[in-house]
Length: 78
Length: 340
Image (cartoon, rainbow over the protein chains, first blue to last red):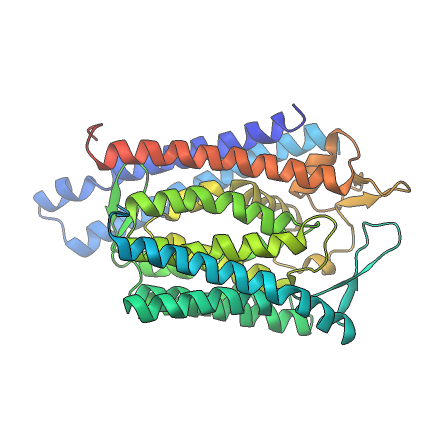
């Protein structure tokens, strides 16, 4: 298949989106239950959650960028 | 969840699909003649005789889609329908400005932030972001997210419009999983409001497919992209919409990562592809040339324009399958069949 490499790249992007989504839903979102129970301020909890979410997305982009470099170098031979 | 047992939804769905398709199909030949007579044509550089192709098809596509949406609003009085329509119209106007005069690279992404405003003002969004494995409650973070989603999707569709029929054909493929997702996780009205995007683009594809009789122009692609983003937001299907568009997202990502700034394609001196004597396209060997999806498709050897379009569609079908798998996973988590 001519596009096997590109399909693998797209699959990797998909898996990473799922992984980031799972982390946000299963780890970051429930954090508020624990933190609020321990008396933390609502605004502080939301700020922490938003910061973690942004870091997760940034890491996703960074990892993709690294993978892209390897993929492009190997395929375009430049 | 879509309820087709409700006869009015079924009638509305048939009506808006028919109106958007028929108006575009019947108006497009006249638009083509009119644009040719006014000299609003551009060269198709990938064909031997460099034929002159009329541009833009955006205004005709807008008439088809807007007519259907206005009728739907008059039948439902749902604010989400008007929000989707306004976002689409603003996306179209931004594209039309870019069609008429060459604007700097940052113009489209920045101006498209305006297109997202109707969705916020008219409250066409939920307080939960649907993330496959569940929904997260982010009432405040969601607003800036909308201001990011619409420009990204608009520009993503715009940047994939590189060969005959690619943008319209690709959007048709990627709209199908989005519609399935809205049918399951969205509402009846948003599902029906999304149909003109599919049927209007289907009608456009008849004229845009290889060999193109008309090009959509920035007005056409930004209209389609803004509407796609608006529907994904109003239909609680943001992540599914992104997964479906992954080849186009990858194209934008590759381009931005290699150029390292937001620029217009025409401002980039080194081209990602090279046109050969037999009118096949080959990947550029220049180190400074931007990396794009097209360049990677051509990495294994030169291909004709028609073959490349086929390859892009195959990638679109592949990402759409991934989007459908994601919908199935989300369905099981949302219905509680798989406990979180």
